[in-house]
Length: 182
Image: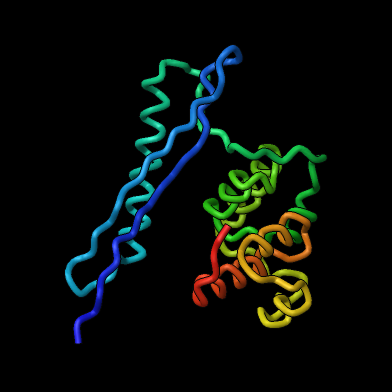
């Protein structure tokens, strides 16, 4: 029996601010990874591709000519700065990449990003302690919150009804069952 291979597309995007007087530019870079016949694309290949795309975005910023240009998330958190204890309880950061993702998703502010990165660095960038509560099982979440797809899951996460760990478990569940994503 022959295994069917699937291409994997890795895409990074962000807005580039080139000055106060200019509208932001949306940059998108992507790469399609084609596996060898009968094989699958490995996690390491995806990680390498994402790192290469990130470098490409940063080089592009430099070529735009503005020293002040930087990649910024398109969604930003605008609430009050929360204490490190609150942030750790809500998000249980595991790595600098996880903290960066929270910033890009608009879950935390730049100041909170710095606070969370600081605690990871002082702890040698190790895994954070277990969350204060155990994530609820996926079937319980689906039934209690009447979740039908990732749009519902993302709305629940945005309203802080579910934790990051619960969101991640639900995302994996809907990816397995093939429900449409947001």
